Length: 244
Image (tube, rainbow, N blue to C red; front, side, top):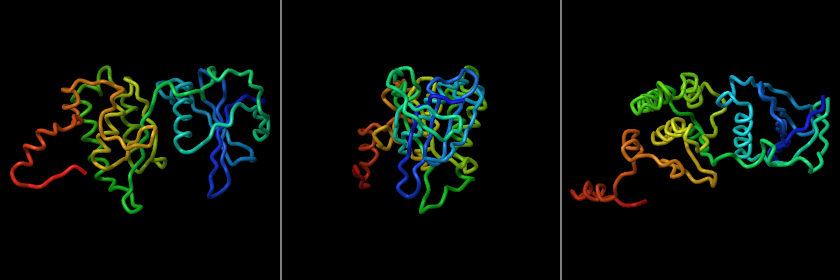
């Protein structure tokens, strides 16, 4: 059956362009996406609701759109994808952008990716140690446990950071419900396991100001910026230091 989708295309200067499309109207029970080389029969992938972001196919669709845009995909607009999953016909502009998952993200995001040194991945044992320390930190502040993220969420974060996940990059929406995830990536960024950037491509090393947090909590997380006066006092014993 033909379906109206929002189409994204990656120019891919090193090879054939790639398409990715998501239904304009997302079902409540499953997220269906289509992907493949431009001009080819697009593959179909279905993700049931219980595997989606917070159990919501719509939120999962929005998350994936942000990921695609971060990777260089360009939105081409609304198209009708034919029964053969290859023919793409532009849809009249009567469809309201506000009604689609491809409209502006609900909130700004941070983008993470695993770091490599000289093209080599980080030592898996060290990654596991850093992940364990980060999880224990989140437990101490009460962000994991009763009322906090579920065990599957923790497992997904750990898997994303580890080499067992082939993707190696993702998105962390700047929402209060995602603060444990954001803290997790910041803690890993401190240890050089991942790089974290904002939507302007700037590397992020501090807690985002969009999510105000008490200084005591930031300190407990190990994310409280150092007081410059304390740094000056610590360096007054004759050792040289400077602002880079």
